[in-house]
Length: 133
Image (cartoon, rainbow, N blue to C red; front, side, top):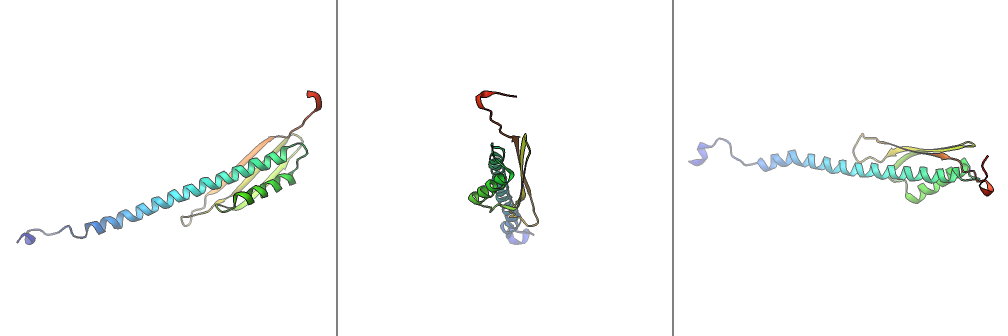
């Protein structure tokens, strides 16, 4: 008799809730993983740029030394989360600059996050005895 008075029961509500909640939860977890990969790729790019700049701007340094240092750092840190890496090194008599560009590995489909790092500074020029021109 009781069953007749009720039109709709609560059977299946847990399933309906799970169908709605689980995709949202999994998307949130994937977004967290993507953020972690992006941050790690950014750190790799910035570390590469700063080490390459140190080799480029040192007295007796060169753009070739900066590129070698960038390759060495990328080899040590691993290129996993940073894809399509392009390193550009420039140096003149007074200024050195390194740019690292690439994309972060993607966990989510169709998402390509660009990663850029830039490091610049004056070229070291030591003079004996603290004499400045």
